[in-house]
Image (spheres, rainbow, N blue to C red):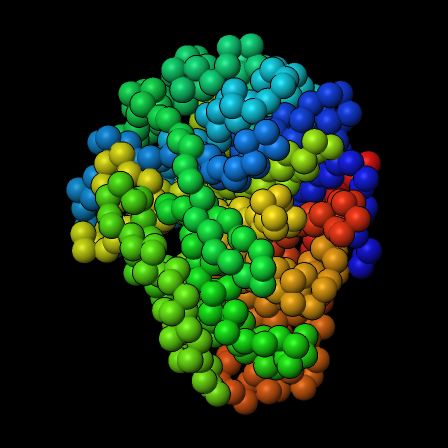
Length: 525
């Protein structure tokens, strides 16, 4: 599919068609972009449960037409107050799965409450209704969920509660099979009735913590009660006449900005899209950005992250001049690949670009007792090295891969974009925005064109460049000749993530695109 969906007044994009449709229904009922975004977020927590859920985190970029400002809501959670490096004495790394990886408070439910209180028109109960319906009555399970279940079947089948919820007597579900989550429906209903307090102080919190502590966790009810997300100023930079906004640390968003600052030194009018030169320059620019990201990114409450220096145009020019004829190595750390990105623009011009995650697919694989809530393993990304920037400390937010993006022109949102994919997020974002701004592509084409991902994904020691088989043979051979460790993967490989984007075109219409690599949809009216 290479044609963008066009809407005259509103647009919703997400990695699952049911979530996109739910957001559109909320808009049709009189809700605004913020109401619709929370509805989409909640639906994704139900219909894309391997990627995101109530037990995970989220980041939101919000533009309100009245204030004309872009703001960020950081919906990521902190580690527990008793979670120290000493807990993992004798271990080199925090276990990536299980109880010992579920050491941060989930932040997403809090973010729903914050977004609606600040900008919404509808109640939490109203916007949670579609998600509750899909949890209570079921939905046709996606091919993507089936594929990830099959890959992780042994882990899921051996984990209490998780096995009953996500497997069918030890087998993976098949695409189209009805998937019901009664316990999750009950939890959503309780949140709809009693608000965020049910999740952070009340019955749900108590049952989650009881299960965790019964299984040896250091997490406490006080940790959940203490959780509070926060509004923040975005970080931003100029590219080709647009102001591009990202979430600040602990998000890796500045990586996308630093990469664009480097690329601004290249004239893409003289670089053919899809050529060796195009991919080589983008990959090497991203590697430069990753080196800085890996050295400094963590919770800014625990470190001085000098963003002014990192986003200085002179510094970017120096990095651009270092990009040479051959591929260069860059140290990268395994990061999770499960995420769900979505965006909404309404008829009034309000815009929300947001992203949420459990970190790895199925997160920690721990379902918190009979709540139906699968807990994230985001805390496993903390380092146990006391000298590392992202070292584990109590009540600390980890380095976070989530990074929704928004590009504005003349003070108004023009492009909302983002993707699933951990380490691949800044890579895919860079591909999408350069294709739209440097090559004039519409969102669907920019997303559908061949993509790549460089470096390691979680659990792998890998420094190679994976490219889709739709790359030309000449491009692949020239990348190899210049030192890239090229591995050719599928035509539309899921490893590349599930991207989505909306652009406000010159006529004021809304063009939306969703990734053919996933189960998403753009829905516009």
